[in-house]
Length: 143
Length: 434
Image 1 (tube, one colour):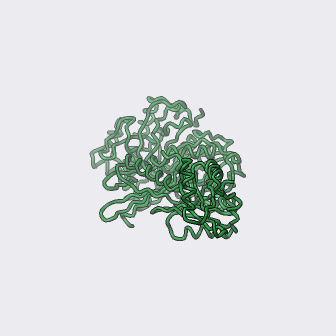
Image 2: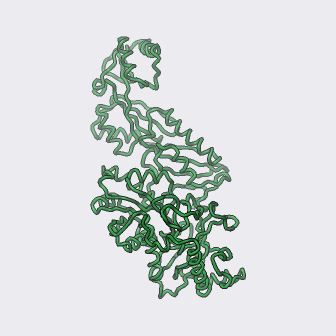
Image 3: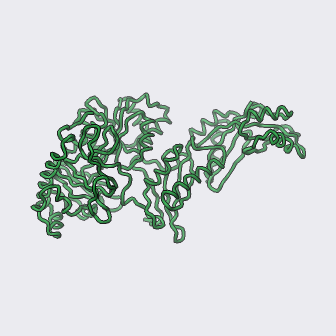
């Protein structure tokens, strides 16, 4: 159920991001979602791809520092207050969010969001109990 | 524990003093008569060979410095006619002219003997395969190890430096049991080995003798753990003989100086005054058996201390502390004396940081700046920015505490700091462009 997210350490230098995406493209790896957290000197690229284990190996072989974390992907109604509703549920359950980012799905009326929380299993239970749709890993990888 | 030469290595202090005194008196007489530069220096301070009666008189002799070697380039300090010299070596002159040292046939024999002692310290015997990855040539490292290993009767694999993948394949196929190279190259070998998917269990390595540059205890444990070997520190310099001046035994608590050949003293580098045992200062050597290129009270610039207690291994040879820095590697940043080894010791407190780092010293306006680049490692990496910023902050605070100056810490991508196949390039000083 949990979605595997790859994080890659990048220096803030020209061409680093291009290199990662090129390496993955050459190996026919499809990126479903991504976000970058950046500071003055470095950035952390977070990626959801269709073949996470393979992608992790390829990036390591190319001397990138990579790690893999479990995240959850949810679908929220694409309407005002849609996200607020979900966040309130997590707040009520005292589940803190480390970071989150939205990405593009195939359905017009739903927005997809990746959540990084400390205990993804517990968060998934809470969300499902509250009728929030949590996407399966395969569903996300094949977007 | 085995010794190569029990008679000398386990001699009582009185016997050693007698041996050293006799040899010193001979050496002083020879250099006074054969080397004009030494004669002149001694005459300048009104010293005659007869004034040196034992090692108690050692501190009356003038020092010899690297500058003296350069001034007498190439053969001015040789104490034998060139017809008796069978080999020369040269040490790269990174800061000036290169220096040349020479050996008679007897010098080569003594050299092989002290290396045989060194390798025996690492457990070598005639069944060993010595993988000699020091660079063959002018540099004394490789040929020094080579003849000492042959003297023991071990099988020498004279692979020299470079071509790392072939090194590893050879270690595996030829059954190398003892590795000889610089410690930074050993770490590089390990990285390449892991990339090639070769496990330490596939090699026959049992121990390694590592030298030619200062290295930290954490580097030692990393090499020992990742190769599954005993790693001992060996010390030497071309000016004295090359490798084989001193070596740790398997107790790893100081390097036994082969003092029947090389008499050590510790001095205050500022005043030149001899310091008592245990005190830290610059180590100075006088060679007392060398024929072609004897040196009296040579200033090594290496920082160490001496320990005269008997070692558990049974050797009585005085032990010098691991060299942790060189007095001339010292950087002065914003008026503060900084040794790269201090920075390394701080970085190694963060056990998760593999020891690959580089110091970038620059001057912005009138102010010196220090940047420390630290390579990201898988263990160190996190998907959360705050974790990485926390690591930067902790390193910075620790450095500030130890050095008293603030440095900028920069995390860089893996394998982006230049790897050396010889000595590690730890410092880039942009303040004095060449």
